[in-house]
Amino acid sequence: MEQQKKGSFLKVLIIALVVIAIMVLSSGFYVVHQNEYVTVRRFGKIIAIEKEPGLHFKVPVVDDTQSISAKVVLYDIPASDVITKDKKSMITDTYVLWKVSDPRKYVQTLNAIEARAEERIEASVYNATKNAISSMTQDEVIEARGEQLTTHITEEAEADMTGYGITIVQAQIKALDLPDDNKQAVYDRMISERNNIAASYTAEGEAEAQKIHNQTDKQVAIVTAQAQKDAAVLEAEGEASYMETLSQAYDTEDKADFYSYLRGLDALKASMVGDKTIVLDKNSELAKILMGSFD
Image (cartoon, rainbow, N blue to C red):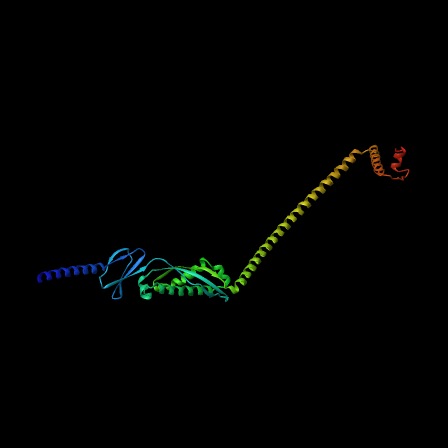
């Protein structure tokens, strides 16, 4: 009976040892997933960092593992006030895309705690934003918003975060606003500036239009003067031709007398229009015509 008890105890002990061995051995395996780092620590010291996806082995009991995400993380930074070079207050609302690029530094400096990392990122991005905006006037900030300002802030924040094993992928100002107390004044000034620009363009357009108008008037005057000159020449030529034709037509005394007779009739006809009384000298050509004594 006692022998049976010893045999049963031995079986239980063997089974327990096998179970313990299986548990110990199974704890020596760990899995690395996609977009993940796994640090292996031995007595608190990092002895390995695995980033290849798959099943890996560590020394059971002695080694510990810690998973760290390698994905790009979005962090929305609370809005904050910054002062421009010309002492104007502006409100920036920024978001950051960041990721762990050096897990060893990340663990050593921040103990791989995401909340600490985001606190450090927030301070770094705020300082970079403040430095960028404080070096520009308010108008320059408004003109530089977008890619230029984003690049400047991202590069400065990135340089500050490399010591923590973190890469700033992008620090983007999603909203750049003015405090309510001076927002209207800035809008009014911007409207005034745009109106001045519009007035300048209008004045330039009117000056150019006047220039074109003056050139056109000058060209018209030149063409008109030339046309009048040509007309005067043609008229003089026609008059000369007319006089030459007359002189050829009435080149004898009889022809000249006949011409005078016709001219007299024309003059008499013109004089007889309307109710008129004509007083003529008896020796005038018209009197001779009326009296039938024209020789």
